[in-house]
Image (cartoon, rainbow, N blue to C red; front, side, top):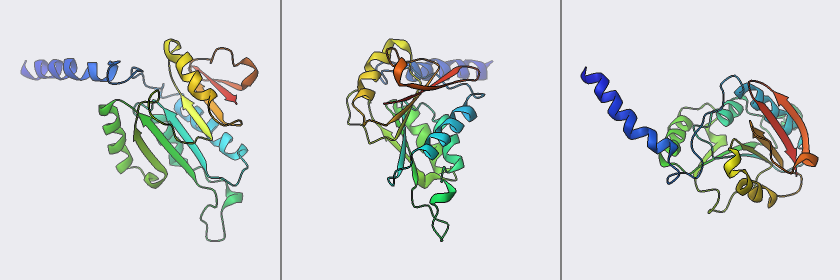
Length: 193
């Protein structure tokens, strides 16, 4: 009986931290696990398309537990034609996970410690609406329609040519920027600014 009561108390205390708009303007909803490899493949294709000499920065705005970018970084995303004779890439891919919720940011830091490609992963505890965002070649978002207009304003300030991958929700008014739509359990929308 006591273990059940203890679990209920822990649940009652922790759930508000994950869903609180005070701790994070966007409540935590995980990406469907069946769609994670699909999104990682899309990100890999976009890295291959990005033929500049600059490193590729993939930024997850509101990373939650970081399932998508941790999966993507597992692959390393180093195009073979860009590896030098030493086998080291001339164009590394950097994965930046931005999360405002302190509990989720802590989970991200712990997961990063044990990740095989941890040197390519950076965790930033930041509020995407208040703090300066890093440069991004590719942005991944999974935000609901109630906050999409605010996120859209942030994205429109990014460099021309930046790719935006939106999970589950279309970005209203960006029909002409849509370059690809992929179906899994839920749809994935790929845009280019």
